[in-house]
Image (tube, rainbow, N blue to C red; front, side, top):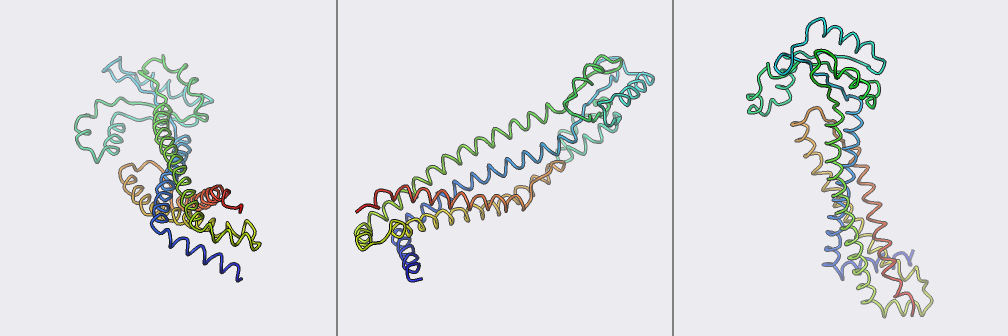
Length: 296
């Protein structure tokens, strides 16, 4: 117990002696881990949206309404419906009239009246919304029904999803790259701080080595200093994410009601990851910086 008291006492003394550098390290690690945590949460959000939308992806078969091609007849429309129902790759078929399409459009853009005013009910064509048993089988439906009488266009909604996921992926990768660069900078700052502390106490550590102290006993206070700084930065980063992410999700959910968002469980899980990364990064940086101060 006396040895542990000495180690903890030396750790506290080292933190107080280099208070400004300790604060700088904690803030640097907090910024790095905040970006890293945000990238992880963004990745989880993208995966959740992809999983949810993958199950709801539809093929839109827009019907001619007389504006750009001869309007589809009732017989053609019924024939198309029957063939869609009989198609093995089709799971469900929904008909959406011009009025239904306009009503859905108004609901989606109810907070943007300027957009709604530019579209009239007659501007949106009727369509069949087709959900496939396997979204990868879009080509089967497109090849068979694209030239069907009364069909104007067959649209694969996966293209819209793919574009969204590509953009989100680029943002996530950019945030992760910046976070990794910041983590490296934080590791270097931790290493330099521990090196300065070890150099300032080089006479003390030399005496400890001469009287028989082991390398681990000499280096442990410095390693604990670095780990304290890493953990403090991780806790600060998690606090920032825990405060800001729910607010951002709350505002986004009010604007986009059809997107599933991550919850507190994901934020808590990322907090554990940040704590582990902060402690591990600090421990490794401290150990590497102490190698030259272990020999007398």
